[in-house]
Length: 436
Image 1 (cartoon, rainbow, N blue to C red):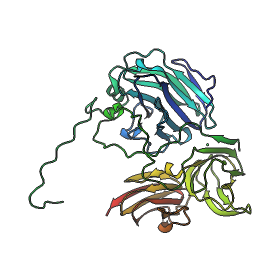
Image 2 (image 1 turned 135 degrees about the horizontal axis):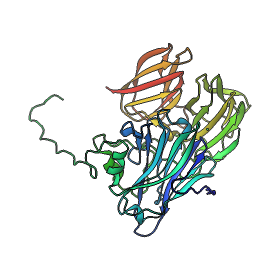
Image 3 (image 1 turned 120 degrees about the horizontal axis):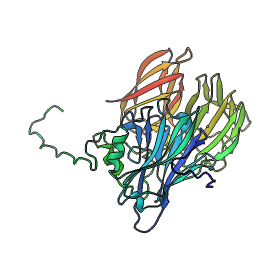
Image 4 (image 1 turned 180 degrees about the vertical axis):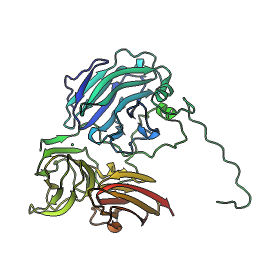
């Protein structure tokens, strides 16, 4: 990973490209040195979060929008990473703060605490090293903020001797018990009787592979207490219980207009997650090509303006996955492990097609769709992928097949692991899981 000459002094700012950035929070590892717990705060125009979901950290590693993720690599004890997909940041969000809290000691005890942002191809686009930290136990390294239709990074360098509680309060997080989580209540004895019961070229996303989202911590635990939890240097747990599909570093291709895209050689064979972003409006489509160089499977076909979506794609019958993009505007294709797809646990919102992972028990799935562009067809398949090498080999269930500008449907879900392929969704949607 190359670091350019993009060093920024405290208080200074610079434009960064509006792409999916990888942001490292790191320091030199020395014997006995404390570790940092990095995170991000998503702020609206009033400089405050909208709620607890706008805090992203190791205990809640994925923002509901999918635009900000926290990732950890056990091989880098002294570094944590944030994936900041600037084009996907919601319009209501004006600033994204990069923050940290300490497991022990102070920020002043760290050797060269640094925040550095990297473009998808690995180029450093902004770097700030803190030189004046002292007794602070929580810190704002910097912020990404909207300016003139793009994004800039500012080196903030603001510390809080009052710790995570002071930081949280400043940006609108309610702190019930600032430093420690409340002890769990002791349950009463059981009753004796039963009661009621972003084609500029191929670019490699560098840095550690993202880990799977961890289940959110209980909402009753104060955010400041959660931020203050130390980050264990023990090996990172596997990507949840999801084992379908190989794990690899993401691979990104950007372009404009129609092109043929070939996945990188380093991507292992097997099903992958293909993310697509397309600027502007108009019809565009993406097809998989077979070994005869003919389209054999449609992946995306949409007229949504400023489209962002993803799909689970089986490998073709050639040596590598090849895709044909037919579009007018600029676009970005990213190949990711399926384990990076969002988990459907209780409720999710989104727009356009998306692949989701369901790990829960038998349940009912409720869906609401608000159609756009005069249409509203939506379709979803469920694949019982356990024990199968490809999506095509798994048992397929039709979960949603409906048309109309606005509609609400429900469908039964079997036990997970289940791959949900929301392959057609011409508008915004909300999914809810109802226990049976």
